[in-house]
Amino acid sequence: MDEQEWLTEQFAAHRTQLRKAAYRILGSVGEADDALQESWLRISRANAHGVENMGGWLTTIVGRVCLDMLRARVRRSRREESLDALGSDAVASGGNVIDPEQEEMLADSVGLALLVVLQTLPPAERVAYVLHDMFDLPFDEIAPIVRRSVEATRQLASRARRRVQEGRAVPEANQARRRQIVEAFLTASRAGDFDALVAVLDPDVVLRADEAAARSEVAIEIRGASTIARRALAFSGRAPATRLLLVNGAVGAAWFQDEKPVIIFAFTVDDTKIVEIELIANPERLRSIDLANLDEQGST
Image (cartoon, rainbow, N blue to C red; front, side):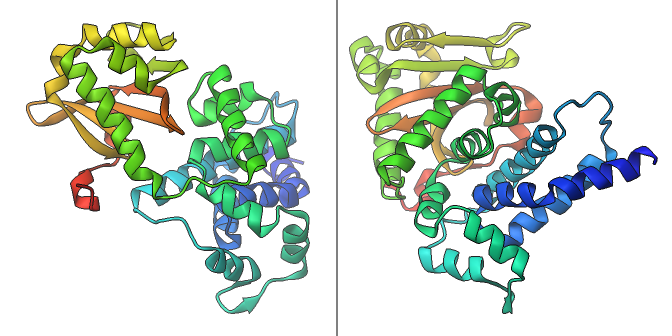
């Protein structure tokens, strides 16, 4: 048996579990099938020599494809589907009754009520939660998928788990509140107001900057409200050139030079505090991020 035949056999053996994982992340039978098709294209071109945990390796690839699809969904400004839309998609596709394999997958999968909560989680949180809590993938394997450190990935799953356990979603109405918090951070930065900065930061807030943003050969990671507030004050001179924007559909900001974004600030806001700030300056990553004017989204 050559390697291609062996990979085909392995993919077929794990297909049902991979399909369940894709459905739980995406909430759509059709998109789950699309994800598996794209995953197979990547798998068929990959070198699987030395892979010890085939199920984990395949799930990692499917998870990465699903996250790409979720981010593309945000870039297209598609809002969260309603319960009715989710139900119709889970029961039928293109007017055709789903086959027994799909029925078994859905019966064994999460209920629609829980699926609705999952659908409202930010993409990275959803992927971290599903792959770890439902498919036992370790955080060190999930971290590269969501582009976070292992500890940050653990926190993503923890936040998602808390929301799922409490049965609460993250409604679109919170967008205005998130804007207020990020605006307060930028205003405090411009004013050089240390206390105001600390007030909008979670005590355990994490700031991460890629190599380009850190102006060094290695990325940096800073923790703690006071430490991050002091760092923000050190760069307060740049604040006037920093604009509030939608960054991949979420409230964020960007520092501009010559009308071009140089550094993007991606904020994660939980309840009333900023819990994570990511600084992105790598040119390749900048090109992949969708920026939109908040005022064009109906904000005041």
